Structures are given as C-alpha cells and as structure tokens.
Image (cartoon, rainbow, N blue to C red; front, side, top):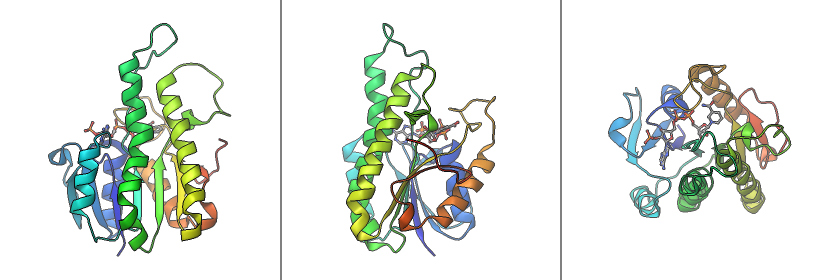
Amino acid sequence: MPDVLITGTSRGIGAGLARAFAARGWTVHACARDPQAIGAIAGAVERHRLDVTDPASIAALAAALAGRPLDLLVNNAGIYGQRDARLGALDWAAFERVLATNTLGPVRVLEALLPNLRAGRGKTVVTVSSVMGSIARTEVAGALPYRTSKAAVNMAMRSIARELEPEGFTVVVVHPGWVRTDMGGPQAAIDVETSVRGLVSLIDRLRPADSGRFFDYTGAELPW
Ligand SMILES: NC(=O)c1ccc[n+]([C@@H]2O[C@H](COP(=O)([O-])OP(=O)(O)OC[C@H]3O[C@@H](n4cnc5c(N)ncnc54)[C@H](OP(=O)(O)O)[C@@H]3O)[C@@H](O)[C@H]2O)c1
C-alpha cells in the first residue's frame, strides 16, 4: 500500500486525513509539533515530530525518513493569524509567523522530502490552501496575512508543479471547504469528515495532467 506524509495531524483536517488514509490501509506518517497530541488512529501509523517553521525539525524528519519512499505529501499544517488584520493595526511578528507557516513551511517540507517523493510511485503533492488565497475571489478586505500567505503558497506550488512536471509529479493546491475545526469555528459549513471524504476522493482522481491546478474539496476547479 502507498505511503503518505501529512503535516499538522494533531487536530482538525490533518487528523481527519490521517484517520482516513490509515483506514484505507495506507502507511501514514503523521506529523505534529507534539507527536503525543496525535490522537489514536487505527492502522499503520508512524508519528513524527515536525514544526514546519523550523528548518532543524524538518531536517531531522528528512534524516529519520532517509531511504523511505513516499507516494503522497499533504502539506496541511496552517495558522490563521491575526483576525482583525487591517492597515494601521498590523501585528508584523504575527504576519511573519503566518508566512513562515503557510507559505515557506510547505515549500521547505517539500524540498526536504523530495528524495522520498522521487523514490515513491505516487509522486503527488497536495497543499491545503484556501479560497481566501484566490486573488480573483477576493472581494472583501480582512485576514490580510492569511490571504497573502495562501495566495503565495498557491504561486509557489504552481511554479513547483511546472518545475517537477518532467519527472511526472502531480502538484496541486486545494481548498478544504469552510470546515468546523479550531480554525474554521463552530459556525463553519461542513464537518471534518465531509471535507476529508471529498479531499480523499479528489486525491484518488488526480493525474499528472492536473498538476498546477487549484481545486476545492468537491473537485471543482477554483480561479487563481
Ligand atoms: N477550517 C477551515 O475552514 C479551513 C478553510 C480553508 C483552509 N483551511 C486550511 O486547512 C488546513 C488545516 O486547518 P484546520 O482547520 O484543520 O486548522 P486547525 O484545526 O487549527 O489545525 C491546524 C493544524 O496545523 C498545525 N500547525 C500549526 N502550526 C504548525 C507548525 N508550525 N508546524 C506544524 N504544525 C503546525 C496545528 O498543530 P498544533 O496542534 O501543534 O497547533 C494543527 O494540527 C490549514 O492549512 C488551513 O489554512 C482550513
């Protein structure tokens, strides 16, 4: 069965994705800043410590996984940052943390694990972005750091999709829906299971021709 590595599996969508892939018999490398915070998951699960903002943590993970093929990387870890982030009231340190986590984190993790992904058969990289990173869909202000970080990771993954195209990789970004998690809040439209079911079904259908595209959890394509 294939091997998947998922970041941010201590809760929310990442935890749901880890449960779903483990239930399908995949080997799941479940990563979290605190591996003890990863809940019980039935199946073949290996827990790893990973802070996606910390190059030493990423290097330690890559060293621990040296020689182990990975079929799929899911860059899921993310933070929302300052909610009332408007000009004149910006918390710049918080802005930098959002960019470090949501934009640089996925690129750093992908770069470090590229040997594992090259050795795998799946050659697929899915980054959990957000429709809030869609420039075309930005009609209202607010959440400036979060929107900026997701638009930037969209561009990073689109560019990486082109870079890895000759090697047969499929690199996409996805919007998981507005999901009832700590980030999405209790008023969100869908539960984790609905989002995860859609994302797993989408991942199953991905082909190299999809590389460099932006989908939501229903499989619909989103505008950049
Ligand atoms: N929920 C939504 O409605 C929604 C909508 C669009 C996009 N998304 C995206 O979906 C992804 C998952 O969000 P969620 O709703 O599941 O959020 P969540 O419940 O807040 O969970 C976020 C996860 O990311 C982890 N994380 C944060 N910073 C990290 C770091 N530096 N290194 C490693 N892990 C880190 C957290 O770990 P700790 O427990 O250690 O903090 C946690 O496991 C995010 O990328 C988010 O932007 C969510």
